Image (cartoon, rainbow, N blue to C red; front, side, top):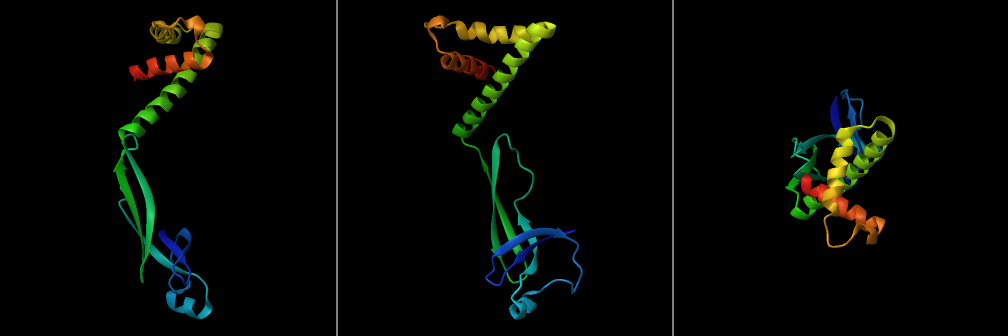
Length: 153
């Protein structure tokens, strides 16, 4: 199988395909000039190696259509401290929701002491504050729990 780009006469990629190339079966740049239909060019990828999604991000592709091929260039950059913190916050929110749900289910259904203990630890440590819990809104309480859980990650 070969990765190819279907390209129109204006050098715009119409479609990407993975096909078995059979010589003479597909439109070429020369026949495209006559019949006006898109033609196929092989794709060469640059910087598509594996990367660490925990600390890096990959953007692209940026396509360059040449006479005999299309070059797809990808850019791998390190995530900023802000992006890493945002992802950590999002993970803490997801994990906390799961922990609370599991703790409630465990308490009600199977009394899973390990999960209940972990949630209780987070709740206990989040409770240590100048503002009494009874004066917090549900959103404030969740934020306090999330921040405490996030600090444990």
